[in-house]
Image 1: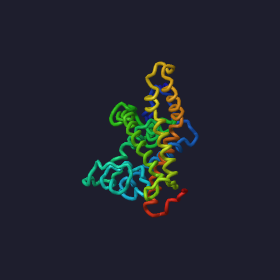
Image 2: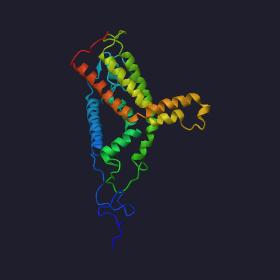
Image 3: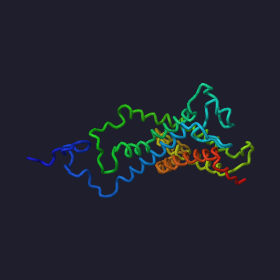
Image 4: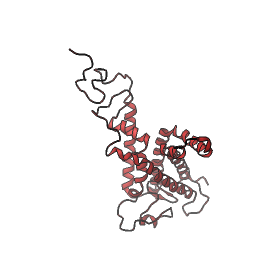
Length: 273
C-alpha cells in the first residue's frame, strides 16, 4: 500500500523518499526560466566575443589607447609597437596572441568569483536553475571534489586582479595623451577608459575575498577603527556585487571594442580638448 512517501518514479536530486511526493516538477507558475536563460546568453556572448578578440591578435592599439584585453602586453612585438606599460618578458619565440598571456588572470578571477559561480551554475548547469526549482542532477557534491574544489583559488586570483587593475589604471592615465604622446588630451576614448577602470575597481573591491581581507578575523572592530571603516565601504560595494560584475564585464568589452574600431579606421577618436 502506498504511504505517500515513496520516491517519485523519476527519482533524482531532491526527489527522495524523505521529501513530499509531488508529481509536478515544481509549483512555480511564473517565467522562472527567464533569469537563468538571460544569464547564460549574456555570459555566452562575452565568452564568444572575448575568445574572438583574444585570438585575433590584431587591432588592439590605437594611439594612445591599448585594449584592456592585451594590457600589459608582455610579448616583444607589443613592446616595439606602442609606448604603453610593456615589459618584453616573452621574446620573438612567442607566437601566440599576447592576450592569451594576460587574460588568464582577470578571467580566472571572474570564473571563481562567488557571484559568477552562482550565475553559470544556474545558467549552464541548472544547479539549481532557479529558486524553488529542483536541479535535475541525482546527487550534489558541491565544491568538494575536482574540478570545482579549485574554486578555492579565488582569493589568489584576487591579488592578480589587483595588479591587472593597477595596470589598467596606468593605461587610463596614458589615455590623457594624444596620438603623438603629448599630455593634455581628452577624447571619447579617455571617457570610455575612465568609466571602465572605475567599474573594474568597484567590482574588484566589492569581492567577498576583499571584504574578508579588509575586516575578517577581527574580534573587536573598536580596536581597529581604520579597518572597520574600510570594511564598511567594501561591504556597501559588496551589496552591489552582482550589478558591478555585469557592468564591469560590459565596460571592459566596450573598451576593447572601441579600440578595435579606432584601430580598424572606422572613425577618428572624437577629441574634447
